Length: 153
Image 1 (cartoon, rainbow, N blue to C red):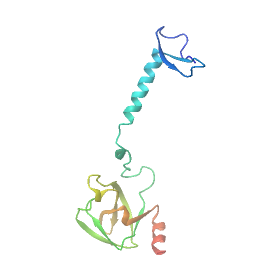
Image 2: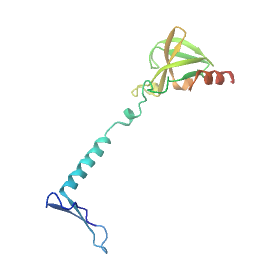
Image 3: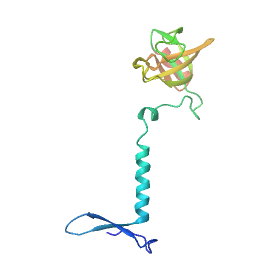
Image 4: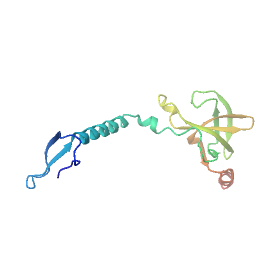
């Protein structure tokens, strides 16, 4: 199999000494332009692989077209609402089980602090707003869905 462009832009061709099978005796010949194209594509692939996995998994803080982040149903019996998305942050309020709150935003906790890992939700409560961990709430698309789930428990 011979890959080349006729008429070739340059008469210089590089031969890759790769025999696909001994019985067929196939030799792959690529033009200089094709070699350069392959080199650029490989460099692009390698550059794309260098991104950190954690940075590519970070969710957007606010969705673009969804009409809001949804509603949170508190599942813990006495959940502490924090001033910032950290276990070490000051408590600003306490939320009771089966309460429903609107979600204002969400962020991923600091990876450097094991207790802060995971999603944090900023909830809008009466007169204040604060942060709770994802394990303390269930998220629903609409307020009615969250209230139905709360009443069925």
